[in-house]
Structures are given as C-alpha cells and as structure tokens.
Length: 371
Ligand SMILES: *Cc1c(COP(=O)(O)O)cnc(C)c1O
Picture 1 (tube, rainbow, N blue to C red):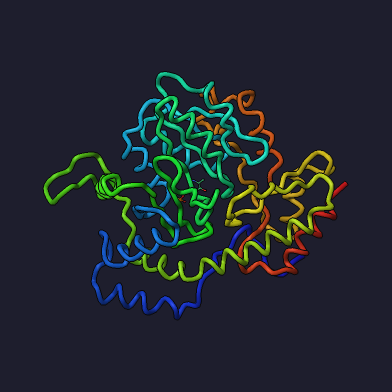
Picture 2: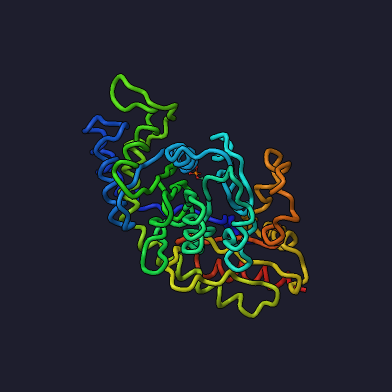
C-alpha cells in the first residue's frame, strides 16, 4: 500500500511568499471586486498569454457557460455531447434550452460532426461542443455545419487552457469559448472561469450580464446574474500565470512516461495525441478494452485499494442523469460510442508534482490486474 493517497489531480501552487506582494496590492487598493485593477490586469495578461482578442472573467466556469448562452440569446434546442462534465448540459437547462445529445467520435471522444446534421431541427439554434480532455474538436467540420444551418457555436473549453490546433488557440474557434479555472483544472484561480469572445461589443454585453444586467447606475437591461471574479482570484491568476508554462512542461513529461510504460499492456489503450496540436496534458484517460481481461471497474477498485484515486471521467454519461434521461436523444441506442467509452474510460493521476516512482507504482498495479 502506498504511503500517501495519490489523487487524480493535485494543484500546483507556487511558494506562498510569492503571493504576498499580490495580496498587499489588493489590500492597498481597497478594490475587492467589480472589475478592479487586478481583474483588469489579469484580463490583459490572459489575452496575451492565450492569444485571444477579448476575455471576460467569471467567478466560475458554470456561470460563464450560463452567461455565454444568455449573451447570444440562445433558445430552443442546442446540440451537445453526453460525454462531458454535467455542467455542460446544466447550463442549457438553466437557460430553458432543450439539450439534444449527439454521439461522440470513437478516436477523440469529442462530438462527432458526421452525426450532427441528423439532429438538427427547426428549433436548433446552436451547437455546444466540448474539447474533451483538451483534445481539439474537429473545428472546421463544426464550422461548416454551423455556417450551413446558421447556428451559433459555443465551445465548452473548460479543459483547453493553452491548447492550440493548427498553430492557433482553439479558444478562437466558434462564437464563444468558455474556460474554467477550478482548482482541479490545468490552470486555476481556486474557483474561476472566463468567456473568450471576438469583439469589444460582445464583451461589454457579457460584462453587463455577469453584473446583474446593469448597463449604468440606474439601468438594468436583462436578468443578469452575479458572476464576477473577485480581486483575490484575479491576483491568484496573475501569480499562477507566471508558473503555468513549467506546469505544462512537467505534465508533458508525465504523459510521455505513461505512454511508454503502458504501451505493452494488452487491452490498455491511451487516447492518441491529436495531430498538429499543442496539448496541455490536462488529463490522462485510458480505455480498458476486453483484451485486458478484468473490467474497468475492477481496475478502478484495485487502484483504490492501493490508495490511488483514478477517476471515471466521464461516467455516468450526462444523458443518463434523471433530468436528461427521458429525452429521446438520451437513449443509449442513440449514443453507442459514448456509452462504451463511459464503461471503459479511466483517468489516471496527472499533475506536475506526480513523481516518476509514483507513476511506476500506478503502472505496476495496472499490469498486475491484467488477466
Ligand atoms: C470543470 C468543468 C466545467 C465547470 O467549471 P466550474 O469552474 O467548475 O464551474 C464545465 N465543463 C467542463 C467540461 C468541465 O470540466
């Protein structure tokens, strides 16, 4: 039994002393929230780091998703993936929108563009894909469909901080992209999120909606929410940004070591790296195939016995939760690829401070479970 538990992720925090000057600046300014100096600096720094035009910060990714849909006045039906974190579809329900689930691609587990058109109805107004595990969606194919049918595209980019496809940030794809800076994500502000948009007018509307819908002191134009990021979280973000390149580099090493160590275990399949993309190694999903002998759940349990907490992301599928499962599109027969992936997937621990010997230990447990 390993001494200390190994969780699927662990935040990478800079030395505490490095945060003190940032905190001092917040204390001295007396701005605690409402778009103060830290918030403004963090927005500018993020635009530059990510290579995007405009960004609006939020207190978390879920409120950013809710507001993204509201900002574009999305109604009716939205096509989305069942293979994601539940917040993706919840953001639709919160806006009174009907989710329409479409199956995923067997290779990258992202929304399968070849299945989208069949799900479009006169009520469809948008597509909400997810760059699952930070692997880019087929952006060009989704854009072609959106253009043909005049649909908006809002990417749930919660996993894709720093990810590029064809030399460009994936956050520039579609109409809007939504990030999460939750503690478990590659880049965190403890809690936080953001919407990436293309122009100042869209950002202004988003900024109004995250502040109750106020456009000036006495005018409210929409039932906006309170989604503002505080100065404390923005200060954390500015500090974390100094360390994110190193964190991504360390994650890349861990990814390489897993791929080498797991290559000769029959029935353990790693998701292939996406061609032509800069990855962020946010997750390390494996698929436990029948050739492995034991099931995914047996492996999950065996790892837990050794104090190794791998996670079954994404199981259960969103479409199987009670508020979704009565939808016709939620039927497992409509989602065979996602259903199988949810039964076979296991995300192994990956975070910058995971040691090489901890990785060996994880791989040894997997090897010993093979039958
Ligand atoms: C984490 C996550 C969210 C929600 O973000 P929060 O910041 O935790 O609200 C939404 N979608 C996906 C795919 C996520 O992984």
